[in-house]
Image (cartoon, rainbow, N blue to C red; front, side, top):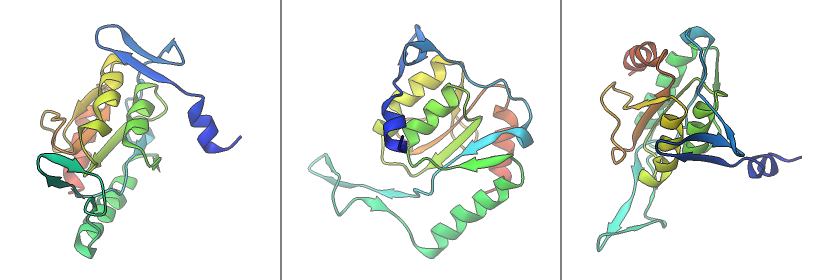
Length: 169
């Protein structure tokens, strides 16, 4: 069975105040407490450039990610620093699926900066919260859905994860 088909067989849902579910079954975040035993997910989708024309966001040639050497070096250096503090790293290619991975306990830690916009995190944010997880800015500040910066974990790992993220900047 190919990878796309496997993802098609998974339906994550979350309703504010009602819980989070995978294919109708309740899910919850992991109970991992040790950063070094944690599975981290991230993406190399840095500093998204979104064209705004007549107050309409255009997803076209004008939109994309900033891939200059200094930006990419900073991104890969951060990932390299974090690799020494966690068990392993995953990149699925999807902010929303990474958030769902946190919600169902398959992932312990996730951060991403520079994703497309609120639509990339809105659904996943509800699912993570309803599964008992926490969302925050990678700097440790409160999560802002419009900031194009997100981090998520279970509540037990949050402080250690923020410390690791700050040390990796």
